[in-house]
Length: 429
Image (cartoon, rainbow, N blue to C red; front, side):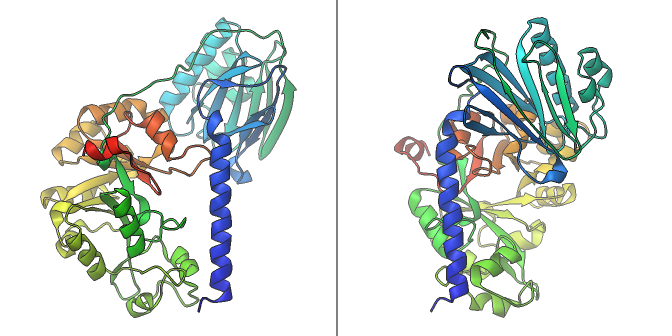
């Protein structure tokens, strides 16, 4: 019997899932850089700082586009057409340089544009503030980290607003606006379809539920065509490896009310939503032994030697690792290392050389950073290092299809929840 609490949690999860699906479908036309709006469009700009803990967006006649961290620059060709790009000016000085160069070009061409900040747009204070002030962006030149900011020049002069928390502005575009210049041309990267571009995230989705790390999720993803399977490997209170995304999620999934992490024996007593089988290392090994063409991609665990020695087949193991020390340990012991985002970005000097010396062929990072790290992504690609991105299905419209159509080729593959393979991808394996 399923408890009322478990049933209510399951219903809430399904409602959230269906809502996310609806949101993704509704947003799909607003992902490209070349977007269209009805004539005589009004524009709503909403900027929220990090401390607001809310999303930022721009809306044009009811069509809303949420934005990511940094500064988003929107260029208007006509009241019916616009393009935009987001620059992570908090994390990347290169992004600040690129933003300034494009603003300079826009001002030279008398372009109509707007800027808005989300989350954290300035690291301490905006880099190169002297250049920004010369462009007339006085408030932006002194912007502090975690401040909200909106700018536009719709009425022929610069208008800026700054707030420590949030700011919102609604303005109207002139119907006379006409500008054919394109500042953010679409880049289409070529790639060869292949089944190994897709990793089943948390075992993959099963019956609309993500990140269960369950046997049923593995079975369903294998049936769909996945051959790379990510599993979150965590430890029970008595030091046993099991598959669980995190203990709070596991407790919600299983209606568990005891202390966390649970003991191994307590973990093994519970099924996810009463239906899905949780896995210890023995069961993981049994499943991969029964599926000899499947590869395990680990997350969470950062002990490459101990885990690789305990896994059924080290040749079918890729371990995401979270420190340079663990990457180097894996390299010395013939373990396939997938370097995570933070240690990759923290490599001092030639990143490619470090990865080649340590025989690292895989990278795992957030798709949120790839636009501002395009140069690095292309370097990794050109040296045969495969970049897989997570945070897919995380932002409205940035779903698996978006990543496949827009970002494959810049990156190699993705952690996917529910990818449906076509024959071309399967045949090219």
